[in-house]
Length: 337
Ligand code: UFG
Image (cartoon, rainbow, N blue to C red):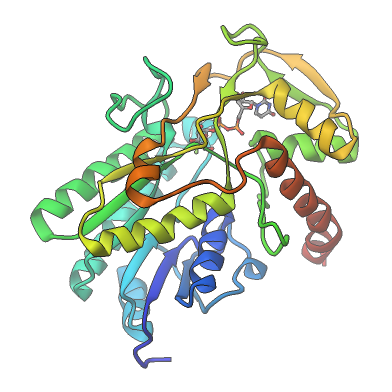
C-alpha cells in the first residue's frame, strides 16, 4: 500500500454486479482494480481481485485518500442506483447518487490530476426509440429519472472534457445478463426487478412471475430487449480504457449484441437450457417500458474491436442459471447468519 503500482484503476461500484466483472477483467490482464464502494448494494464476496475501499462517492475526502493511497491512474465509474421503477418513486436518491456522486468523483479526479474515466451509462438515456437498432447519434430523451440521471452525467462529462481536459468514454449498456462463466460473481440484489434473476428464481422456487404486457407491437406481443453478457460488457471497459489512453476514443459506445429477444423467448430459453418451466402470469404493461430496445454496436466493434463472446441468449441463461444455483446454496445462507 502507498507505493506506486502500474495500471491501478479505481472501480467505483466494484462490489456490484457489473463492477465486479470489470474487476475480474482488469485483473486478468495484470491490472490492479481498487474497488471503491459504499456497500449499499455491493457485496464483500464480490471483491476478489484487488483491495476494497469502503466509501461513498459523495465523500470527496475518501476518494482523494483512495487515489493517493493506491496511486490510481484512471477511473471506471460503475457505482450508481440502477432501477428504473425505483427511480420513479425515489428521484431524489437517483439524482443525488448518479449526478451529485459523479460531480464529486470528477472534483476529486481534478484535484488528483486524473484525466481518464470510463462511465457506466445506459440505453435508458435514449427513451422511446424512433429508430431501431439504435445508433449513438439517436436523440436522447429519457423517460425516467434513472435515464435522465445517466444522461445528465454524460453531459457533465462532456463539459469536464472541454473545460478541464478530463477524457471520458460513456458505455451505454443495453440489458446486462448472465454471470461470470466460472460463477465467481453474478447478480445478487436485495430487491430484484430484472427479468433474468426473477425468472430463474420463479423457476427454482415455483412462484409465478409476471410477464409485463403481451400487447406490444412485437412478434409475440412482449417487449424486445438486447441482452448482452456481463462478461462481454466487462471486456468493453478494458478496451475503452486502452482506447482512451491512445487518445482516439469516441465519447459514447452502445454495448449490445444487436439481437432482440422477447420476454417469452427468454422464458423459452430458460426451459431449453435448464429443463425448468418458468411459472408465469400474463399481466399489464409496466409503466415506462419501451416496446423494443436493440443496439447498433457497430462503433464499438469497429473502434474498440469489441466482439461479444457470449452472444447467444442460451449462453446468458446457462451462466446466469449456474450462478443462481450457486448463489442460493452459498450466499443466501451466509447472509442469513
Ligand atoms: N419483465 C417482465 N417481468 C418482470 C421483469 C421484467 O416481464 O418481472 C420484462 C420487462 O417488462 C422488460 C424486460 O422484461 O420488457 C426486461 O426488463 P428488466 O427489468 O430486466 O430490464 P429493463 O429493460 O427495464 O432495463 C432497463 C434498461 C437498461 C437499464 C435498466 C436499469 O433497458 O438500460 O433498465 O434497471 F440499465
